[in-house]
Length: 83
Image 1 (cartoon, rainbow, N blue to C red):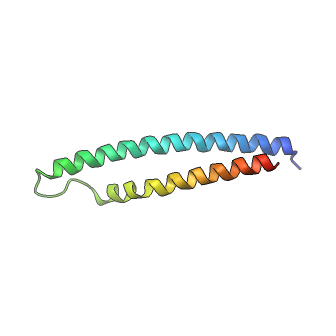
Image 2: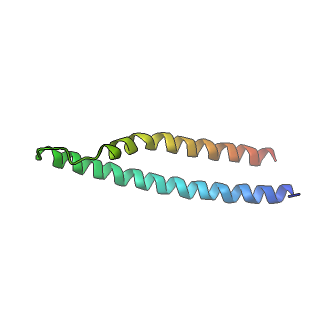
C-alpha cells in the first residue's frame, strides 16, 4: 500500500506532465491558427479552398481540450491539498 507521501509525489508528477502537455497543446493551437489563417487567405485567390475541413474542426476543438486539461489539473491540486 502506498503512503500519502508517495501518492502526493505521483500527483505532482502527473501535474507536471499536464502542465507540459498544456504548453504543447497551446503551441500546437497557435501553429494551427497560423496555418488556418494562411490557407484561408491563400484560398481567396484560388478556385477552390486550400483549407482542409479537418483543420477547422481541430481548431474548434482546442478550447475544449485545454479546458479539460485545466479542470483536471485543478482537481489534482485540490486532491493533493486534501491529502
